[in-house]
Image 1 (tube, rainbow, N blue to C red):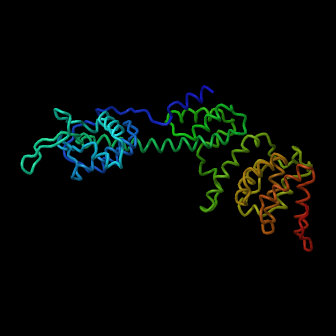
Image 2 (cartoon, rainbow, N blue to C red):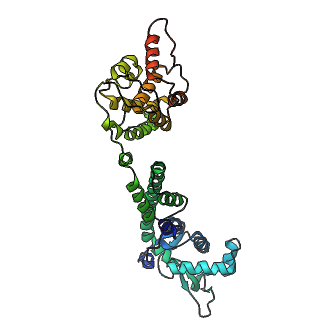
Image 3 (cartoon, helix red, strand yellow):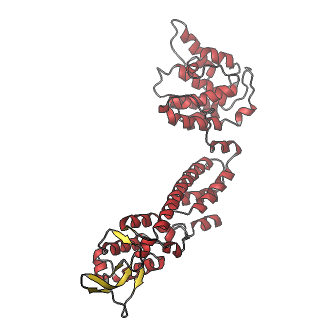
Length: 386
């Protein structure tokens, strides 16, 4: 469990990597104080600030009468008492207030401008303030460029983290049934439930990708236009299922014969010794509306069934179970037979699941379905018996 412990140490915060000097870049003019606060809120983790110090900063900014905050040193001093600040912060205790004020000073966005006795006050000269002692907010205005850059970096980092978390969830789901190390899967589960740094996510994603079976690694890559079937835009969800199904069969088809000879592989299901491609192609014709070219081998027939399954409403787990029980070739032939009766079968997925159960019991034959479809094509024979 060492990997889990390492990953879970201090994963709730990003490391503080921005020096205080970044906030003190010389800059003339003034800036919208609320826009500056918004930018700092977005990039707060880069400067080691939480939401409570930001609330105190907001209260300090509210004591500056103008919306524009000047960048000239000493030109934006506010001098509220702790009691006034506490009231504006809905009664925050004074000890808590002092702690958050100290955090703001350490961050460099606020500077203390203390009087000799440490009190905060101002002395006027006529209508103008001659001298003031309190908190100088001008460093926040001078950090405008640094804040703008930090916002850009923080936004990109959050997008990368979102991508990594999505990949992490996908990889963990794919590895659940492949015998991957339990420690690795548990670490992935815990990280998905917590907020953690980008480097930790990237590390475990790399480890999960390395643990993937060879035949599953191609599923992670982006599909090319040549691999995608030509269907309407409204079937985009089906297209994503198609990619998964094609890759699922990518290794097993390499061992299949490319001829029209009867298939001789069998599982627990009944063995249809005279099941051939010509017979399936002659009996089943509906699939040609989507794939006009006749399959050249069993591997192409199985690939066609993978593309048709989501269009028919058959979920990948249902099709995979049928392949496991019947064998990929017989499952593909069964799916094409169901497509022939699409007008009569309301839920093809449930129907295929039922046929899979019968195949497991040894009471189902694909040849019987094909024979029934052949009889149905003749006048007077319209029942499909299984």
